[in-house]
Image (tube, rainbow, N blue to C red):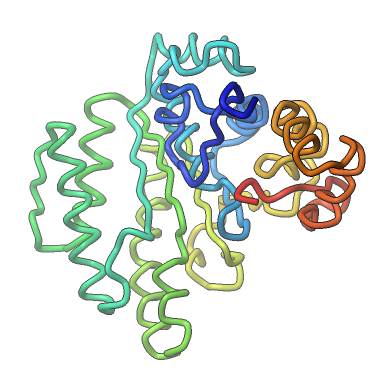
Length: 282
């Protein structure tokens, strides 16, 4: 029976790969559409393996108007309309940088990532290495804006370079200062931006990284978006129905007993004081 079940995308963070390969996807696009329509600058904090990267990948595809990926999903109509005027998107993961090598190593790796991204977009990278990653970031933002209008900026694991150095307070502080300068560009270039979302594990108000960015809305504990990532009980029972039935038969439990055991074992998250959630990686 299991071979007929839709494959589970364990560890896959690419929305496009997930959809093109026909893997199981719990539709969160209605929640992301609500976020896009209700504001422009967001921050979301969640534990590791909670779906943050997939969320940003989905937003990337939404703003680029990749309508074929959204067939049958809640945001299908919105993305189809967006496809008429797609946005330039700058998507960065701070987890890719060589943060363990200190500020200099991290800056070089981030600079290289931005240069590759710029070249793929056919952008002239005029500053070269005179300002390092900071200059390359400005170049990419200006270039994307000149070519396609206001830019969407999506930054994943904004705090990873700091957390990698958390055992060395002096090194962590140096990394924090470097990131503060980098993220301040988003404030300086606000008129170039259509939408911004940053994700991470730690609360940004506690890191001091965004002292100059007072326009980010922290939705980490907001009831309105409590279930934007993670699986609700209803989503679990609906989207994983075949897997649950298959497992209950193999384990010798009734469906209800298996659901109760799963709830006891996995359902330990709540960010809005109301909605209980399962960690997607579980």
